[in-house]
Image (cartoon, rainbow, N blue to C red):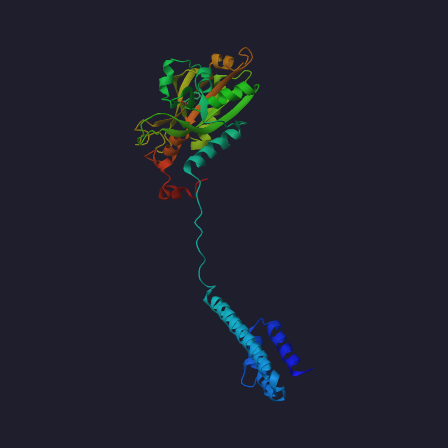
Length: 341
Ligand code: PHE
């Protein structure tokens, strides 16, 4: 092998040597760049190279040296960086705190309500928030110009007054009665809208859970038993209910339901305004006219319905004084419900 070939081989070696740690790099440095490196030895052979090729040979040896220097510098830098990162990771430091979210109190209470009725065989039924006049009003025995429409200040769409933002989830009950044959046992939770001035007590949108039960031989006693079970599950087994006669166009008879104040137990406090009772829902036997509107045979079937505001129950349960807190989504407020289920 002549001296040119030997030098070419060294060039190859420099390029191809795989170096993965500092020890191998030091060996590489000694071999190619150290004070007694192999390139010096080979350069010493220049005396035996014919004159006309001396320049070519000198350039070739220099190229090997340069390649070795560059490779060494690059690897040295790489190893140093790895070292510093390894040193700066302090495994004894406490980990980053992951800030877990919390369920919104409205969801917490809605789930509690739904779970109780699920145990009584009620299935959850949801539907659209943008409704037509028929499902929100007319089918529910509130024809146009019916004064009861004023009870629910409605958001209409300007260009088409037949389209409304639903004012209650009773519209879901109408849709279910139109599409399903009795027996029907549904719960319709969802967001509803009313054109009310926003204050500590009322908002232009809120949430309801309404229920509907239609079957043969359903009576007012069934309604009473269902609600009695519900309030005892939600507020505690000592809770009592009281029904006050009321009016809804879609139920007859209709009632509003009060429960014994679960804060003071009935002795009177600020939550129940010293009365010992708090109002939580409206209910009644479904008006036969509503059943007929949905093609349900009123000779065979009867039913009851009820509806409650989730915000109201949430505010009572957690003694929240301003309904706006429930939609502002201030995390300082919401974080307090982390443990609520
Ligand atoms: N839909 C009524 C409301 O929004 C509540 C209700 C439902 C009352 C069913 C009676 C029966 O005010």
